[in-house]
Image 1 (cartoon, rainbow, N blue to C red):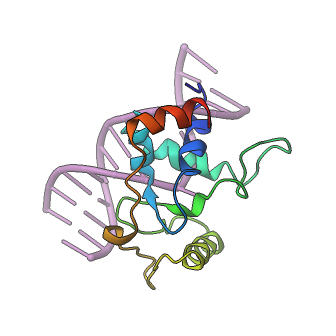
Image 2 (image 1 turned 180 degrees about the vertical axis):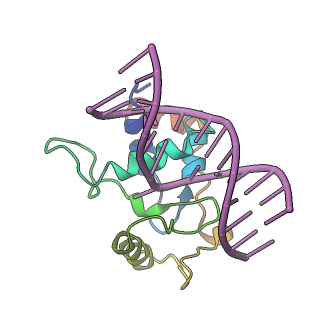
Amino acid sequence: MASNFYEQVYKVVQRIPRGKVTSYGRVAAMLGRPRAARAVGYALSALKDPRSDAPYTGETVPWQRVVNSQGRISIRHRTETTARQADLLRAEGVVVDEQLRIDLDRFLWEGPHLVELDDILNQG
DNA sequence: ATGGTGACTCGCG
DNA sequence: GCGCGAGCCACCA
């Protein structure tokens, strides 16, 4: 199992199918840390300024597919980033209304089965 | 080691 | 449904 928490977050996020979303809390729960939602958000914010040799960047990790538990794009982002997230999601078919809400009954990704998760974290 | 910092959540009123 | 307050956690100085 990868020792770096951020790396695990990125690996799981990369498995979110196009056109689907999940929440920070759910990603944390998948990693066995149900209360580490904030850390997940922090991990994704770190994608903004990656090291030059970093394998995980905003280009390789579909960060836009992670929203809050209410199914809303976090309004705490900088306005421009929020708008970009909405655009990216709409571009892949996710319906985002004017209040930046997404219907989780339609677009929520339930996550991988336990056996798959093990492979994701170990192999990637 | 210690404390500050978020792209979070949940429970209340 | 909305705002607030209080936990919670990995990172980094």
